[in-house]
Amino acid sequence: MINFFKLLRAVGTLLVVVGCLLVWADSRWASGQAVPPLEPPKWSVGDYWKVECEVYDSGKIVKGPVNPGWRAKQTWLFQVEGMENIQDQPYFVVSIKPQGDNKCPYWFRYWFRETDRHIGRQELHHQSATGGKSRSIGPPVVRKDFPPDAPSPFFADNFPSLPLTTPLFNTDQSLTPFSPRKGISAIYQEVDGTPALNFMSGAEAPLLKKDAPAAPPGNRLVKIIATANKVEQQVWNPGHPWCVYGERAHQGKPSRRYWLVESGRVD
Amino acid sequence: MRTSWIRWAWIVCLLAALVCGSSAAYAGGDSGQVSKKMVWSCWYWPWVDWSDPNLYDYDEALDRYDYLTWIYGYWTYARDWEYENHGPPQNPEGWWGHCHAWCGAAIWEPQPTKSRFVSGVEFRIRDRKGLLVESYNTCADGSSYEIYEELPSPGLFWRYLRDEIKGVDPIHGSKRALIGELYYGEEIWNYPIYKYKVKYTGKQVVSGTITVYVGDDGDPYYADSKKLFSKIFVYQFQDVYLDSSKNPLDSGVWLGSGPYHRPDSIWRPYYADYYTTYVENPELDEDFLFAILY
View 1 (cartoon, rainbow over the protein chains, first blue to last red):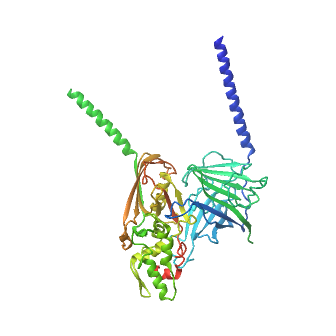
View 2 (view 1 turned 60 degrees about the vertical axis):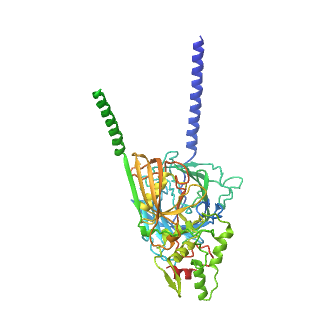
View 3 (view 1 turned 135 degrees about the vertical axis):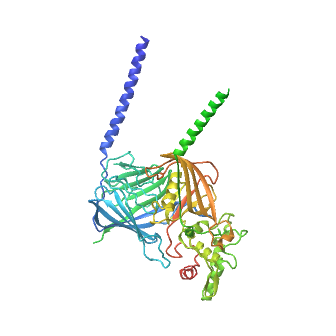
């Protein structure tokens, strides 16, 4: 008789555990279904936008009384220059140039696939003789291609003040690593339909309206995670050509933040 | 008895052969270097007055610069500014100096290899190096990096060495030296890295050593010399993942302890297309620097 009760209790416990698992799995499935794929921004040739970026400097490179903190804003001008095909697939060609006090002596061109904004090609352009002492530091244009058959969010480690991290749009791949081919680490991407705007304090982000009672409709929070404890969070809105706000943290410490300040069209 | 001894010897030999054979089968290496002409040695031009020479000393680079501008009818105070801002009034510690600025200049600018007379004022090799160093003083202020990784993993460190110094995937399309802040702790010691060697065991997950060769700034004589004086740092690591092309991924851990068991940061500023792009000393002028340095 005792054995029968023990058995009954064991079966009951098992049923409770299985029930909980089913509820959890159902909620995961339901939440997964509730979040549609991220819609790509609407671009056309002639569109431009400006992004400001601040980099956090820990003051660990310079000897002397250097205080850690956010350094001067660097402005970048993005412009959709045209459309080109790579392996029969249409790509937007976007130039990115330093503006104002930005000391970057180079400019860039990126090819974004129309369907999902996968970056298929990049070019670094060495400016020709802007300064009196300019000399050749490499070929005029350095081009790199990325495989179109392995689309991935774009997450670069170099050029920390260039805010170019780009999610992959129109994909439902989540919590599955994208291939590290041509990259330094595997990349994960998460998309949330109802962003909880818990960002760094003190950041300027004129279009984010994070102090408003309700986030602007259509805001999507995108989290791009590299395996080396680097996390980039961005807020995308279909009404804007680029993320309205983004920030990167490395091992939990802030490393950069950026925001959209202007957009328009050049005819 | 004799048979037993021989049997044991055979077993020991067999085990030794197995161990050696297996490690040899999985041993690997990687190395790269840029031309030694692409970096140069210097002196770190300390801020303290008890370690000479200093950039603010009589008859050193900034004093000669002020004399040159005086000949042209200008009164500049580059030497005074240096003393006030990069000198004793700042209560510096002995290790404070210009190593970050030297590194920026040493990886981007050709080494001055001879004296130059400008309007009768001689600028020796050490003066021209000193002015180049001074002209890169704000290159590490945080807003002008093309590479910056704080506390890089062994895999990431190796990857940058491989991409930039070996030239596997360099940012500028050709090999270029990197800068390492190689003191893990409060003090800061930057060096231009021009060569590396990696030895490892394993196939997909590897462990081993990374040796880096850097230009040195630890002796005043280096400022006068055209020779590259080197230092070597050796790091031990384990558990770095390699991709199918044997490129290291951002992974692994450093072994050991103390200030030299791992690099603190790797970085590189943008190239400066003007001599005053990164200048902090407001007395320095593009045209005069151009005449002395270009």
